[in-house]
Image (cartoon, rainbow, N blue to C red):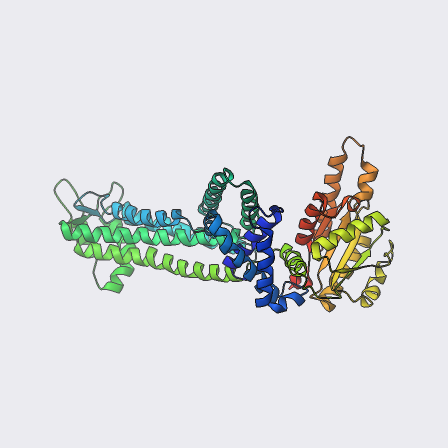
Length: 510
């Protein structure tokens, strides 16, 4: 799924999840878009994972709804564009870079060029420093997600600020829409952070190149209109030192162009003193232009191309949020075209849930995966029987796998860890398309701790413990008090959203 397609899907998803009554996107429009998208992507209705067909269904449907939505609320188009990193800030930075470069050409005065002064040497030193910093950062960050300098963070905050400004404006007339946009902004911002970093990085490279180009253009324009004089002056450098520095700085440009920068005697004559000094600037303008091109323009443009390629690759393989799987399946089955006979196998470990908890779990799974799903609650695996998991799994044929455990237990590597490892490894080896959902029932622990003055604190601590434990095996879990789950209630809606994000497939190990 392309970056813009995913942005559109997540935008529509966020609005639908927060707009239950259909005030922003009418319920009839949603159903109509689902039916039309299924006609265009019929294979999507048989998918048990977020397959290309199911992705095509989501993209088709979201684009249909987005076209209708933007006619009623044009602000969504601006939010979608801003979330992709398109702002006038980028254009302003590029134009400002050219203007600053042109102004630097006059820094030494209207008719003088100091061949050892800031306009060129300062820019070269700064760019060399940046190259070294980028190299060090690249070496340190190999194998990890990219992180940016202050410019990338500023760019990210600017975009977030612009989106927030648009949402504050939309709040005045459409609160439900603003709620959905805020949710989209939060979810997409964390997902697309590497893309925004690469866009900011490319912008800074391009701006640096344009700054040097502006300097070159400014020198040539002023050189045509005015008679320039080139020379140098220094408190600390003598003729020999100045010649060595000039040879180092302008040597490569001289070799490439065939323009000589002179002998030590020539350099000595260019020194400005009370008695005179300086000389014709034409050749020095050419040498400055070529030197700036070699040290600044060429490396920066190469960096722009390399960053653009990296951005293209990152945009093509941006990770799909796990919540989209349950969302897509619920949409397909909600139209009434879900695959018949799909089953969810529920296996509890070190926990024997009561009937109210089972009913709550069934309600949660129906809301998460579709009402047509058949749920099979199997015999629990007792504490200490982890070695039987592989044998039991070989006997299970299901479209979805659900593990049920309780928050009241303290997770142990030798038991709970061995149980999760067995499931994960078996799915990776034998059922890569069958999603796994881990449900941690908070009910028994809440019943035991309710009334304690630090009840909520204890709950948060236990959730953090379990979340970290499950994440240690590369998995995710949803936390819910199953007894409190009722069809259509807020408890079910919140747990459903978390469950969709917790869905895991063995393909994530690839």
